[in-house]
Length: 372
Ligand SMILES: *[C@@H]1O[C@H](CO)[C@@H](O)[C@H](O)[C@H]1NC(C)=O
Ligand SMILES: *[C@@H]1O[C@H](CO)[C@@H](O)[C@H](O)[C@H]1NC(C)=O
Ligand SMILES: *[C@@H]1O[C@H](CO)[C@@H](O)[C@H](O)[C@H]1NC(C)=O
Image (cartoon, rainbow, N blue to C red; front, side, top):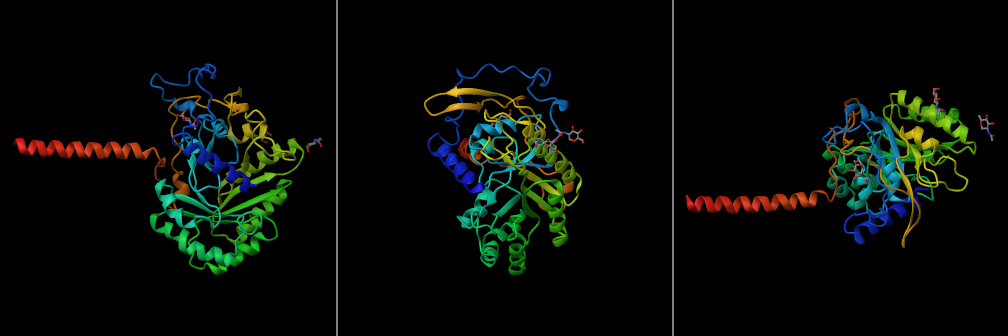
């Protein structure tokens, strides 16, 4: 699934860069005249616009977002103070502008072998302290990699991140019969690989199969914390899917060796699928509300030359909400120290300003010394 999603996200990202002046989401944000006046969230902001402590939901350090949406504005449902989501990924190595500015910690991924020689630079440029690598390498329709070749690529292009203190997530195999054998071959071929945690995927019906799989993985790799980076109940019965989500979230919140999890995923309805978090109009459905801990902020019907349909138009329920930039201390003990996320692109103007300031400073001191 993430192949098409990844491609769509990549296309949107490049469109946003090349057509709209570095990430300005002109295609998806309605003009000011189209925007209805937003009713302010009463009593939630102080005079300075800083949210009061009570209004800011405590983020769940484990719960993340698999951003599979095709419309960038869909992130606004999660970019709100009430949301408990603390991290996100979209199978790409760099966040598009709408994710980079969404207040949710972004984890870059090296999806397969493509452009792998540029991964270290991409990770360092955004100041990421954690990465994911190789999406379903055991599956022909996904990264589809030979385990020995994957181990070679790992040593050449992923392992070097270790020297910068980055935490490395291992290959995320499927829960199909090919997954665990692939992983065993990879580990056998990659004795020198420093893997800090093991991401896994699971799709199926009912909690017992899911829990069995979690424990099987844990028993095989007892020293590696587990990240469930894609999972869903594929039942047609929406009541069952909802209670599956409800139970598994609580289960994983309490299991110490589960470090993170991400439901698949944040996207609008698709035929035959009952695990999407969004409604047709872009708002959160019951699953989405349960998962994010938030209500839909706002959706609006929009018709212009490029788009007709519903969009989420404004997620800023409270201005200046704090960025979620670091892991809680308990979860960083074995890995990198938390660092502030640097939003790529946003640094450029700052460095230009600093350069100008330094230049003016030097000139001034030159002038000063001459006068003196
Ligand atoms: C869905 O599952 C619930 C709980 O298991 C059950 O009560 C209900 O009848 C099911 N609905 C359908 C349409 O099968
Ligand atoms: C989730 O589980 C809790 C505890 O059993 C229950 O109180 C709550 O109603 C459930 N929520 C949903 C949406 O199923
Ligand atoms: C997320 O919310 C913040 C604060 O409300 C806002 O400044 C930012 O623009 C939002 N991000 C996006 C992508 O809309």
